[in-house]
Amino acid sequence: MLRAARLRPADVVRLGGTGLRTRPLRVFLSALGIAIGVAAMVAVVGISGSGQAEVDRRLDALGTNLLRVAPGESLTGEQAKLPYEAVAMVRRIPPVEKVTATGAVRASVYRNERIAIGRTNSLTVLASDTGLLPAVGGKVARGRWLDPATADYPAVVLGATAAQRLDVYTPGTRLWIGDRWFSLIGVLDPVPLAPELDSAALVGWQAARTYLRFDGHPSTVYVRAEDSQVAAVRSVLPATAYPEKPGEVRISRPSDALAAREATESALTGLLLGLGGVALLVGGVGVGNTMVISVLERRPEIGLRRALGATRGQIRTQFVTESLLLSLIGGLGGTVLGTAITAGYAVSRDWPTVVPAWASAAGIGATLLIGMIAGLYPAVRASRLAPTEALAGT
Image 1 (cartoon, rainbow, N blue to C red):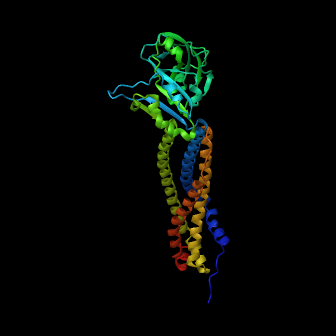
Image 2: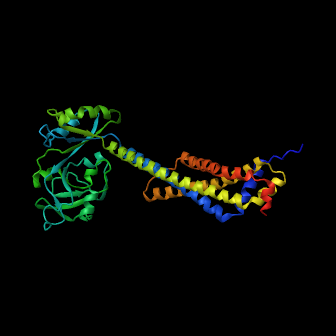
Image 3: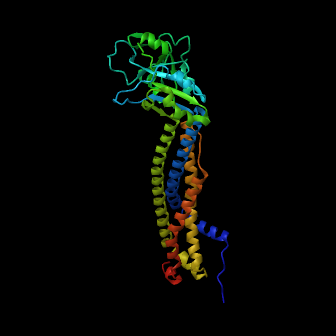
């Protein structure tokens, strides 16, 4: 009995590639649909991973041991006030490394005295001690920070948002605060762990009491504790900062806000990943459509191969291989494109570029699965063509 020759894997790949080489434009358009879907998925995962890496890098640089103490509401619904001695009392906690505070000042900051009262651009004035910036991990973008030589005089440092809204960046510029002029000595970079400082005008603690009638009550206390003792310090802060009314003290950890924001962005990442999956599915439909048309156009070829002894299984293998190669081309191209998009976006934001290996592997694996499914029906249809029927169409 005659037996059909078995095709070696290299022969199967060569045979499947022949069908692709003869129709380059159609192959390009079909692979493009797959590539767009894979690129979208890889880019979404890569950008999300890069963003998470940036958050981790910032937290490593800024630290996660910063605690924020603020007054809550009293039993009567009024805004509570921290006592004058809050900073000194918190400083006595053994694991505490740094303590600093700001105090809300009832004044507004304007570019000059002619601006109508009330047009404050939502900016606040805060009294600050000289240790604030090191404690919260802030940096000066221009000029300098408050020091013992300037904290007692009418000098002001603007947060990044405050400088933008006032359109004032040059140290030496005069600003109207309260009922007198203050001299700008510095502008801060954005402070991730204390975003309330970005829209504030910061003056020295003693200067605020002398020139702006500041009452001396801290409105926010920032505490740096030993990394291993953060939870313990947090538990005793209310009773330490306000022994008489610990229930009216709110404790927060600013680094948790950054983590929560990253979690929110992860939810959006899931949505975008789903859209990328839809694009990949559409690309798979395009591959299936291409393979069906290929079977219809190559009926004479199929009939001739069957007449020369090719089995149905070999015909099915040929067209499934062709579909897999087409999907693989799109998957590889999409992975490269998605990685390039991630790298470009990360570089533009000054982020580290992170593309998880599993994302690339999953993208290529998904394309191969879709390619197999898309090519299965055309392959079965091609294998069922009788040699005489197929050759009759020539």
